[in-house]
Image 1 (cartoon, rainbow, N blue to C red):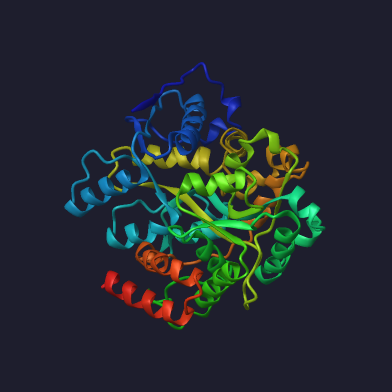
Image 2: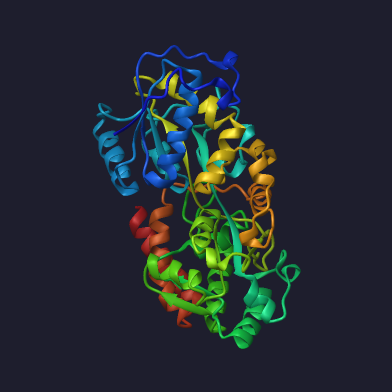
Length: 422
C-alpha cells in the first residue's frame, strides 16, 4: 500500500477549495483501490495530497498494486459471498461495467447524487452509473474520442485540417485512399481482439447493444449493423494494417507506419512520447457515421470512483470525493499536465491548462477541443452484459474484415450473446 501522509506543511491555498467546506469528522483512514499506478494511481495521490492539505487529520491510503482484472475479481468475489471485510472505502470501476455491479449487488454502493452535484459533470459519464434515479459514482477520466492524424502525411496528400473537420467515415475512406496513394501509408491499424472502434462508432449514435428494458438488441440494431458495415468498408478499401497486440497497435502509428488513429484522449501521452514527431500531429473530431443521429463525438474507455456502502469511513470518503474530485478545478489542471488525464468536471475546461496550446499538435489548443467534445458525447445505458456482447462482436471481426456477410455476423453475435447472458 502507498500512504499519503501530507499534513500541516501543506497549505490550503494549494487546493483552491474553501476551508469552510470541510464537514467530515475523521474517524480513520480513507482506503482506495485503483489500478495503473502511473495514471490512475498518481492522479489519486495528487488528490489525496490536496485533500490532506486542508484536512490535516485525514489520511488517504492508496493501493494501486493490482490490475483492473484483479480488482474486479476481488470485489466481485467478496460481494457474492456477502463478505465486505477488507473492502476499500473507494474503488475505481470502469464505466462500461458499472451497471453490472449496481444491478447485481443492490445496496453495495453508496448513492452519491444527494450529496454531490452531478450536474457539474459530463452527463454521459453520470448516466453510466445512474440507476433508478440515483447516481452512484464520481466521474473520473473521460474516454472522449478524437481523430489523431499525421498532419505531414495528410498535407503531402493535399489535405488541410479543415478537410477533416466534422466529416463522415465514408468521406474519411475517400481521403484515406488518396493519403495511401500519395504517401504509401495505410490509414490506420486495427487489432481484431479490440472492439473499441466498432463501439465508438455505435456510441456516436447514442445507441448500444440493449433495449430500454435491458434485453439484447442485436438483430434489429441498425446502429450496430452500420458500425460493422463501416468497419468492413475500411478493410474493403485496403486502408487498414492488422496488428496482433497492444505493442504492435501503438507501435504502428507512433512509428509512422500508419497515418492516423481514432481513439480515446488517453492515447495522447503515448503519441507525445515521441518528441521527434512534434509538429507532425494534429487532432480532428472523430468521424461520424452516415446514419441518422450519429455525431462527431464519442467515447472509448473511462472510469469512475465508487464508495462502498459498507465502508467504515464512507462519510469521509464522500467528503474527499466532493471536495477534490467534484469541485477542485486547479486539481484537474494538474492531472491534465502531469498525467494527460482529461477529467469529466465541466468547470475544469475554463482552467489555464485546458486553454493552452500544444506545439506537438501544431500549436493547437487540443485539450480545449477534447473538453468541448466531452460535453457532446451522447449518454448511453451500458446495461448488465456489455462485456459478454463485446466478446461476441470480437469473435466476428476477423470474418467481417475478410469480407464476410455482416448479416450472418449479426446472427452469430446474437446467438453467442444469447448464450452468454442467459
